[in-house]
Length: 84
Image 1 (cartoon, rainbow, N blue to C red):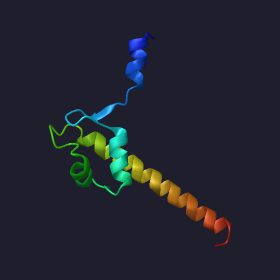
Image 2: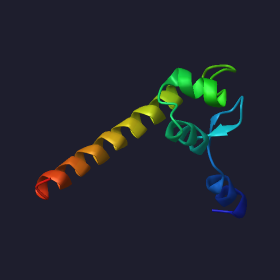
Image 3: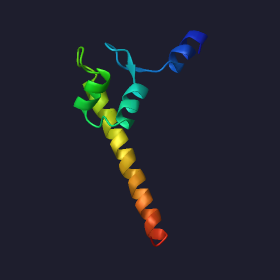
């Protein structure tokens, strides 16, 4: 792998090419409270250009929601184990 290919891999992947937004931008908006596609679009403007990134934004939202659910279940299990 040459240096140019390595640099390309290290750059954040754009989710929304029209607005130049990365996955980290979408996740940051989610963490600030934008929990739906419409809310992400309002917060970041992602998906408001050509719209082809909406499926990827929805995928990120599902992943974040699943992670939150798993963490919540883990916390509940810990409470149960500790008798609280």
